[in-house]
Length: 326
Ligand code: NAP
Ligand code: GLV
Image 1 (tube, protein in one colour):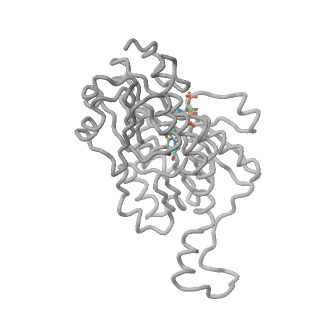
Image 2: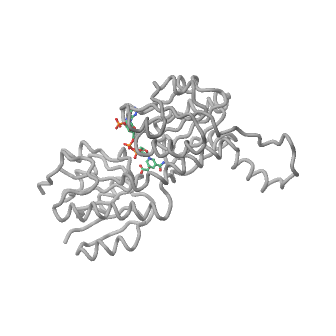
Image 3: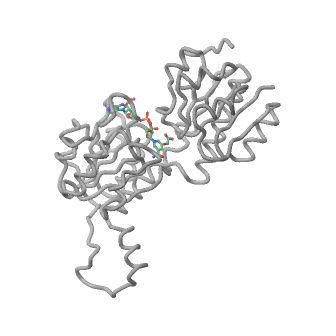
């Protein structure tokens, strides 16, 4: 029997599955735990299921001597020091694939909401009532159909965003670390250097992981290359965009608007973003549908159960830490 510590409110059927396998489960349901509290909470744990708001750095890993696996509830693992985990032979797993479609849907929801000023129009209607149909209303927006979409990071989510764009008759450009000729053919997408993509696209959707190479990939210079009526959508990670530069671009009209699901200093949101009418903001809910979150929970538990049986977890991020010698 091993102890499994879960740092966030979790689905009861998955807790039961861990218990049925003979494990002792403890769950922390309150606000995210700070470093010391996390170490105290999980001191005896051999498996840790963590939220994206948990920072699993070298210090936390040092404080958890029995730990064999960290199962992240998300596909991005920038909240975990994977190199330090690998040095300690702690397995790290994530939840790819199962959240791809939900996240692509949210990218599109943001894109359409900004282009058609849905949130602004809804707020105005609630506050001021419906003034009656007018030919040139306050909420004139942007066409989406037939325009150009630029996708930055053409992996699972980027390609799922592109699949949806076909129904909108869009020209699809993509920029990514690796060219993908098969996906280019399937989706009718064209590879484009980043600068060219930014100059040509009407909508730019960010789908890269956060790494040293992608931090501030979109800064003042990149924003200044975009069309004045372009929309930026970020469903990747906040620090991929220089938020200070983005605020300036939105205020000074370098671009039309932005749809943001992620922020540079989560859970803090740049206070000026909250005052701008040309942004739609969501609190990092890309994968937040009931069915997707259940699939993510099930996959995290599959990973934990495999590791505790001494088997290779299905979605292992650091194969260098395998086989687990503990
Ligand atoms: P993925 O399949 O690994 O796709 C990421 C793509 O980005 C890959 O094609 C990768 O290229 C490319 N890339 C990596 N570094 C790059 C760089 N420096 N420059 C250009 N392209 C680069 O991952 P995914 O499942 O699509 O998820 C992508 C990210 O979305 C996650 O890491 C996470 O941060 C974010 N996400 C957010 C939410 C949300 O709630 N908002 C939900 C899910 C995921 P290669 O093909 O060469 O690896
Ligand atoms: C969400 O942000 C994820 O990385 O899964």
